[in-house]
Amino acid sequence: MPRSQSPADTIPLLSTTAPQPLFDFKESDIKFNLQSLMDVLRDRRHEGWVLAAYPDPKTTRPLIGAGFSLDVATTDHPQTDPLNPHPFIEPSSAQLWQAAGFDADRLQRILDQYDRNLSAWGTKRYRRKIRAHTLTPELTEEEATRLLRISAIQAVVNARAYCRDFDKLTAPQQMALSQLVFQMGVNLEEFVQFLGVLNGNAIISEPPQPSVGAVTDADHWNAVQRTLIDSQWARRYSDRASTVIAMFDPIYVQDPGGAERRVAATLRPPPTKHHRKAPPAASLRASNESHGKAPGKKASSQHKRKLT
Image (cartoon, rainbow, N blue to C red):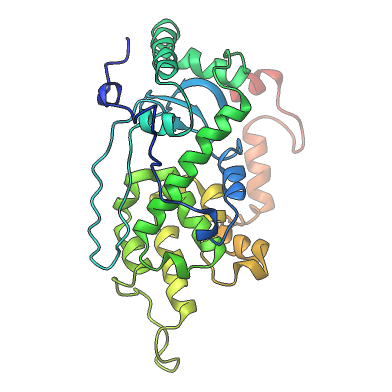
């Protein structure tokens, strides 16, 4: 069925004659390299990279590039932390599209074509075309990169709104939080325990030993990591999560691989091995005799068919 009209389709776009920047952002304001974040987000092992509109696996809403949503309306996202002066900015897809330098009519044409394709193919055939790389490109590599850049900037701006001490974070910590915001959007609000511990509003569930004294910086970040490790997101996307969670380690830069392995071992512990005791020889012989064959004789082809 054709996609119903989204509120984003009717939201006025920014002026084409005198566009105002959506975000007050300078790359010098962050400690990590924005291009490095973009390289991660466009990796097929993470968000993917499709140069034509395609359906979101869960909602069937249209996406493009590295998961850029094409029909999202402006979202009301108030800042509820009185100690954080930075507001959340949740513009519509149309506003982000124009901020990336694209024509509004082109967006509408892509949405119309997506509706026709979805109606004709359905989601299963759409997914097959994505895997086979047979969708007709609607963006160039450079254009999709421009969309990714504006989305990554939005994620950084909102990461600062989520964390009152964002400027004090290490470069990997800033990048990890920005990646979480990119992946989850406003749904990150549901990670109440994570945000509470991150901002020092929640009690650490596993306090240090009495002999250690006050909570240290390492204790704080271990607790931050634990809130994510215990989340459904981490269990469902363990490969991606182990990398992101590891980056919250304050000494991550000293041994990135070791930090990631420690988190991965917690998310995917080795399976418990159950050793069976060998049956007594008499029992094995009786079992073989009851089936009318000597020990070591192969099963007949008929038995093989039944077992398959």
